[in-house]
Length: 255
Image 1: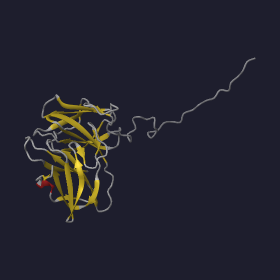
Image 2: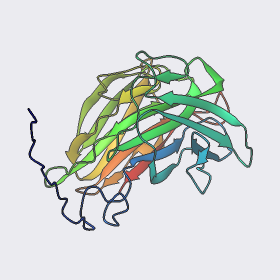
Image 3: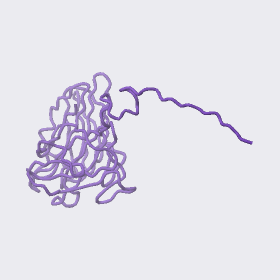
Image 4: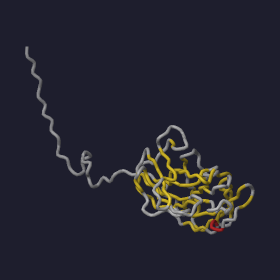
């Protein structure tokens, strides 16, 4: 006995420019992570940053300065930097390739649609060698009348520091201990990755005092910082080009 099966005709509606199958839709820019690259090395030469073999920065990042946020690859990403006009990598690190922190990689990489800071700096115990550290940047809107402020310690040769915040004539200890290569208030740490949280502070004039080993460091650039409401800032504590130089600080403004 023959059996007959109904013939079902399937039809597909016409695709439009907004259809999710249209991979060339103009209104769908490729996903990217956004990274601001910082040169905190104790050397006077500018550096260029790369993801894998693609140069990301177009202008060399000067010492103790930051690039704008640039669209980059996300996920498992190798980040490198070159010095001056050189083409050989001074340091490389793979972010997002390992279940544990290693000398060359770590478990957390840049996230699509999010903002990050990647810092080139001297290794903690050897200022003649370089490393890279990635921080996640929370640039969400601060409350009315507030600015976002973050403290990063990259002064090679300086141990843990205590940071005091002075606003409207009132001083208070902001962070008891911030180790080299870390962010004040960071609750995760490792060789390749760390949260770099911002603190909401009153907009206006702010001064910081940094102490190490019970001694206050003389850093004039930390006095009278002007913080605008609604903006985010990072205070970068950095070392000098020479090993015996007094640490300094730069104020990085985030867009």
